Length: 248
Image 1 (cartoon, rainbow, N blue to C red):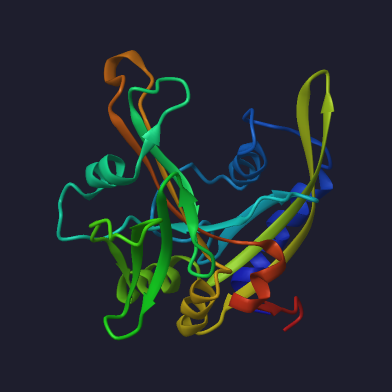
Image 2 (spheres, rainbow, N blue to C red; image 1 turned 60 degrees about the vertical axis):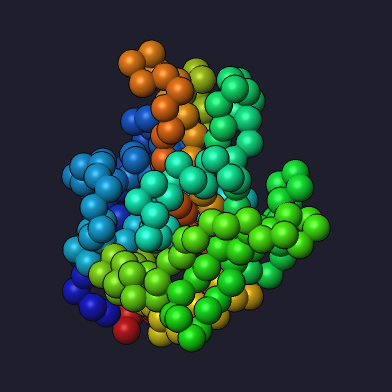
């Protein structure tokens, strides 16, 4: 087995031997934050793998959440594209309805309906782009020129997501505090980038916009773009990756 995998496995095994560990953060991100903190990794948004060339994804057993692959902001000739997305496609925030937000998942297989708007992804092989198609339910095009180039996505995948470790944890609460027991690790290596594009085309990989508003007083009401997320179901991960035998 490659040295990087063995090094991470040994660190994982040390953590597993500790059994139940109190979460270092409240909420759903606690399971990943706690594990990476135990590895000695500080939280960041860098475009590099988490640990010695390996990207780490940590999840609870029986979680129904998709695996977040990476964030990649849309590209556009319009420098104010995030503002335009909110203006043309956004909907009222539940708590402060006078402000628009845009938090929605879109795929290339089934259109996503948002009021009178219909959204879906288009794989444009000629231009080597993933494009967002926005229309009204009556067929009128909504002019929103944004895309993700194959070149940009391939660069992110091959620099950050080439090697992957998925770590599973049991969880329980003691005195209203969550504890994790990290019990399983599996390693994977990416297939060809073309497989990634095919999975977008089939609707297996989805894109989620996470554009909200700031609710803290100093920036209240301003647009808060939390990134654009590319995700896949755990059951489909081997369509994108080859699972690595620990003893290879």
